[in-house]
Amino acid sequence: MKSFMFILILIAFVSAFAWQQQLGAQVVVPNSVLGNGGGATLSDSSYRVVATVGEPVIGVTGDASHTSAFGFWYLPGVLVTSVEQDPTALPTEYRLEQNYPNPFNPTTTIRFALPEASHVALRIFNMLGQEIRTLVDSQYGAGYHSVRWDGKTESGNAAASGVYVYQFRAGDFLQTRKMLLLR
Image (tube, rainbow, N blue to C red; front, side, top):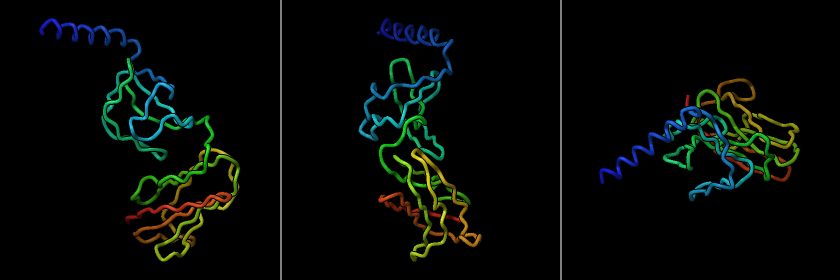
């Protein structure tokens, strides 16, 4: 048993020594070598996995485009530290994402994807169904886009704390989502 432990320690030491020159280097892992782990499908060409050698892989991270909560992801010789959107890939379907952060104060970001150029309308409604703000009503090209809402009504007044609905319309696609403003 002691010799087995010694071999494991030796392998770990040699691996660490071999990676010394690569510590902190980022590599992009092709989606074709990954399984989805029972969660979101990573085979979609619009996402890529980025790994950094030598960084821990426990915790929650994110930005306006994604939130990732992960534990121990492992590929031989690489620690996966994030999954991000491939900026060169075009979306294959219309998509409205959940605003980030949610709940929010004072601003939030709403992201959406367009597989083709479309006229986009993005509107905010209160829980009575009254439109309080039009964020977007214009033509957008194919790709990934984001819009910020500052929590203000069309007249420039601060909206009250509460649940709001945002409606996204692009071509024949229509979707709504809820968000929570806390003042």
